[in-house]
Image (cartoon, rainbow, N blue to C red; front, top):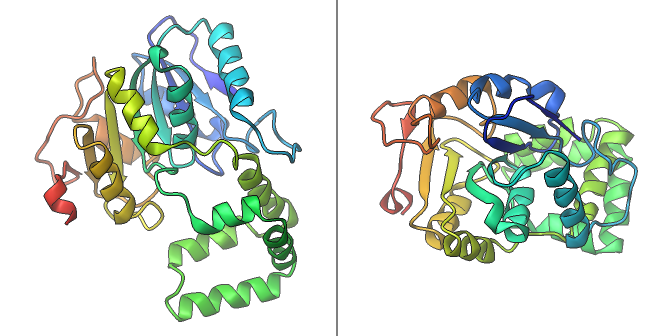
Length: 277
């Protein structure tokens, strides 16, 4: 499901992150008045068609969804802006329809380095059962979270995320179902970079300097795999979809290209490979 602006301007697909919905992100319309903006709901949120489906989706499923969207909205070519989990869908869309993509902006992108537990839970029935059992026992779960944070094995942001998204049975099952749904459509990041380069698709990676979810390690891999891309480091954490953070980013961009210029403002820093060493 998605919300869109009704105009004939160049389209911009926006893929949201985990827990977000197009209804609550309508401020994005204000930030891109020169585009026909389509804000895409993530799976299992908003009015997603995959709510309730427990099997994993395939590349063919994604292809059918994207094809239907392109036909329904008469999209020949589009720009993409994707945040966090949404980056996985953006990369898959690029791999499926590279000739239809004009530019890609990935903000705090997930999918560059896949989390071990994400893969393990998605592919192991035994671990799924253990996870479900743990999620249904909140006292043990909260105790383990407190212990992990106390021993500095878990980052405070990760503990906060876990508490937020496991606060009730529906939230617990949603996290598990999402990981299972996506297990067969994990994008190959290097193949994505190779495809974008072969098709001359401009890539812009935007990271938060204080992001505890998409970390320094992810930034290093992105720069190593695609040194010719545009890389932007903002004075922010993981939530780069906040209105004020996006305004900082867009403030320094030419309206016709939406590619950030190298500004000197302290709120907007463009880093180099040397900054990551």
